[in-house]
Length: 258
Image (cartoon, rainbow, N blue to C red; front, side):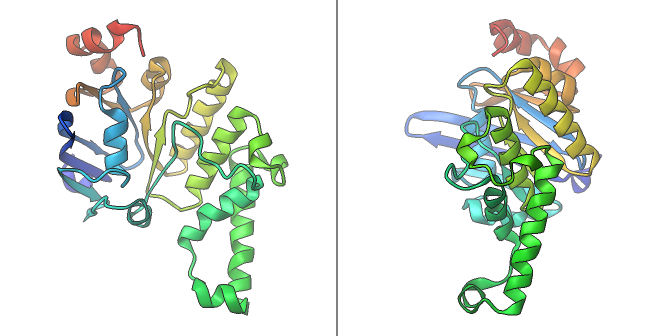
């Protein structure tokens, strides 16, 4: 498949923090409709790469193309408008807002009312706000927590907070959903439910980039995988090939399956 057919192509990314070379010539290409895994041992550079791709860190160099259009990951806001939404390893919900309000905040990234509409509360603004509320309710149902619409986010169970964060990301209508260790802290049942949700999201046409420490989940869920170690790519390919790669076995799987 050509680069033109890729949804996301990130190439030649380097990032240095002081004397530490965190990333060296890292790249990956993701096809539309894939669940793509990014794995590696602790300190391998996964989160740094994720943060560069989603606008939290400015790269020292790199080429970034989303859906055939170059984008510059200089701010999170610009990346969201380019079509990438992300979640975080440490849940970043608005804890004192309700579940539905959290999703509405995410949806506002795709609204048009502006400051004047917010002040005047004109008809167009009221209609848009109603549409935002309805979309938020739809997404609550989509991730399976519609009964908690008016529950304060910090009072939700851990697994349901993860679902809510995914729903909020989906509210931006992303081309690519980037998930930073969504299974972290989940029990076995919650992980099964998470896998089912991610497969559902993919079936419904979304593309997913996934950082995850749970190797079993990644190998069973992802179509293709990139493995990092010491800020460099040591393997890329489908799960079967990656699992058999000697460099991966030595650097990652043989290190206790971080």
